[in-house]
Image 1: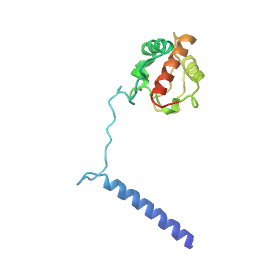
Image 2: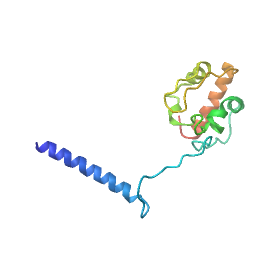
Image 3: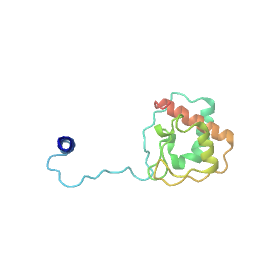
Length: 148
């Protein structure tokens, strides 16, 4: 019985501390639910730091990316709100999405699983070499942003 009282008291203290922390961040006189503004449709989702220089292969990949992928994944793979996720994001780090995942995504499409943009359809008109260059470009952007 004592253990249950202690546990309930601990939950109440933690909950109260969380509530107090939230109230402290409210502007004076604020009441009611808060709204969080979403970036406009199509806006970049992340800020991407560009590398000082792209390798030759990454430059070719950038051209292909801009022609085929940027419409959904945004300029410099920063994503587009409501359209497609940023590829310069920890989710797409090499240890989670290997380079082969990019080729498979282009060839077969991708069922939505990390984001709520819907499924990605297969992308026609890209060769394996172009996808490899696109992947190289994305990896260079990722490295410039601390994603390895």
